[in-house]
Length: 635
Image (cartoon, rainbow, N blue to C red; front, side):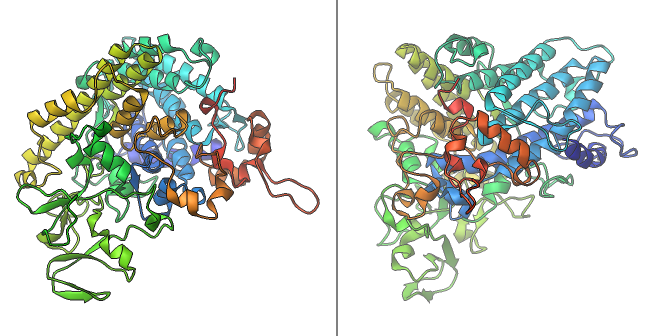
């Protein structure tokens, strides 16, 4: 859109020429802050940053649809409870891509091609494909062929049109990454802060994305993907060219330095740390594990063997065991840390009204709260609801930081003293890594496809390799944290697991080729891909089936709360987000027109005025239950 371009170009010059020592530092001269002077190598790191941040902002809500985590916040808690009127990230998903990233890609591509910098041109094509696919994954339809041009009200395209267009652009990216750049072109390493100029990793990432997207078509008839069909052989072929080990992963290695470079187009926060820290980790009450996640981590498939990742994904807090401590609570070997239990959002009516959990407070002095006496240095819940006073067994996943918060380490202290420390979790710390393209995802896609083909031994081998690869990555990051701050080793959330525990889990807990199921494959995949929109994509592809998603069930809030059915009737499920507000407000005609090409859109219930005029399909209370194109059998 022309509007988007005019907003970003002036700011881009300032951003691209800012010299710093941060995560996005490209060591440039800040003298000429103009769009024309912003060459392709200076645009790339900023475009990558906003592509990544916009994706993760969306994923920071998507993960709650899986039932693995819940929150006291309305938006995130709404997703976990199926309170669909309360949850969306549509504006950020589209704005963070279209404004600071997509509006620069054509200029970046043109300049790169003119200079023979084919790898930068490939990155531009990759980013266009990734960003627009992310939009239709969430909203179903969007302007695509008419987007980012001169029109301030671009025409909408169907989900299929965008999907096939993104596949074509990804193929173009692969072709460009495969070419040798002209000798005078800037090496990709100058602007690439994802893969540090390693073109082979970019090609592998492109093939992983192609396999991922083709696998989204699992509800379509078998046939060629070029016709919009499910093409199992093409997926497997892509995977032979994708990641073959963790060494091939695309990893964003965020830092906790609170560098001087700020996100000027979004929240004005430092750009060096993990976006999930910004959305989840730095906020109270945004991360509580559910019983579903807890049970899958501690007793996968009923084998009674704990996952070595359980201590890393389930939060811990310093505490002292008392006579009333539930026997199910796990303690560290030194008795100074206790691990959270999982919240049962499926069967427990305590949570059906959305009031829980109540986040724990900490008192450093003996005190009485709500008629209960607490000793000094005790956890308690500040509520007069007696049923909620026991919520101290649930530990929130809030993280601290040395950079952003100027604290002494990564432990958050609820009462400001060491006795009140909380661990955070593996994925939501400021310097947690983002695994944008992983070998384990490739393994799980392969396992799913082979399972569909009836090759159980092959499916099991890929499934086991995926689990092992993710465990290895978790262990390596924890070892890095402990090496940087040895005091963290006393907290089970950071302490590396023993090889004996890892081997025992892989050899006894995950099953065998004889008993492998699609449910085991997809459940393990969900656990490895926390804060990826692929979690919600898989939930939709498999229709929230509890036979596939182990220990999963509809949240009790949805089944008991009176207004839930207004937004999600019986038999329906969360399928999309509503369109961004600015599309509804300023591109109304084109948005309304595309409804005739979206099966089911014009049958959605809408308000009818006294003169018989029907409301707009996209304003229906039930818009979130309308499947996107790939999440359906439609041609």
